[in-house]
Image (tube, rainbow, N blue to C red):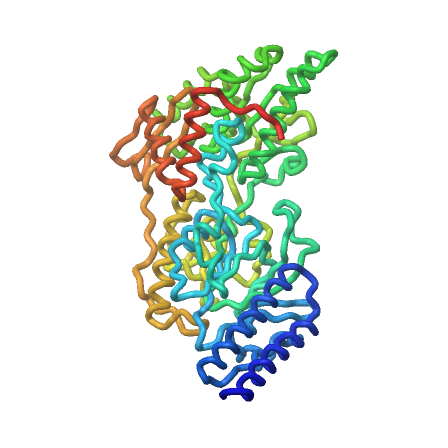
Length: 534
């Protein structure tokens, strides 16, 4: 088309797009942005067609979801609006296949980092727009590190989510997986801890789906834990712990406060003797010894830490390392108590033997279990412990194009493999493996839904790289053996602490985070920890 005819055709395309957009019920800013993006792409395509003498395609926006004709639209119309359920439609043959990742933890973010955006359009759905470097999270609770030092935005980890027009990050939770239609149903969230009630509902069609939603803190059904205890799973938890601890220190110095009430306010109780509980107790004891003693002179003799564990602390380490950790914790001023919690009340917890332990701050760190979302997937085969069952290739049996990894996944029992531990290094290795697998599938033409999943890679094999834990007072444990019975390197003391810090500094996800962490460590060593309460 040339001259006036071409101009009229371009004008008609723009008018149709504007009229279609104006007739849709745009209820949220997200929907408005999506429609504006499609409208702009329509103008650009029409202008290009006019300049290059090509036929003009008129994209259609539909208010009816799921019809066969809708799925034949091009990518500019893949974002549609309905009266109740907008979403991303299935991809066409002339588009890249779409890989949808649920979650933003260790496994999900390693997968996002390795996915090739030249092969896939990538969509991430998670109520948290960043990954948390959990090994250093305990340090943020007491001001050793700032919160932003341990968080890395997903749009930085996978730049396609920020740059590519057909890749998206959605601040939302998945509420349902429709494996028959290759769709996930989602609901937007304003607050990760407030759940997904009342959010905007939408759906996303997928070619490949990866479930990496992680796990939830395990409470073993003990009454009062969710109401009165604080967890240490993400940055929000660390902020709550820090705020509560500094508030108790301030309240204890109010004139007229009863001495017993002061002791209760300044009693910090940690339940769970795993690496997280031990490292937090060690950081807290350092904070008391170095900073509370100097900056809270009226409370310095009252604040103390108790670690409660049903068995032995750090039970994944061998006897020698456990004994060293126990002795070191005691020298740091941490009281170790053997027992099981029976009930948690607002100001005290009750043990199975009847003992009552008053507390001002209660941190719960007893391991993880399946989340409510994972439990709701009744049509998915489950592994031992209630996690999603997967095969040797991290595929979910009986559901094509669906994969699972990290704390929410485990081997199905018929494979005969032992369950993998819920560790960050397991999830990260699985994310790396699955990223390579999906990239190979896409390069060989198997990236689209229903294209089959041939064995293009070897089965996933996990090899334990070792364990590390800080125990306070510039001391740590480093065990580089694959198991406590194997031969290899296991160290304790100051040199282990140097290795611990060096390893975690190099494992952070970006140079920005490394600079933040190194600078925070330096300023803390020179000036002490920040005691501001926000």
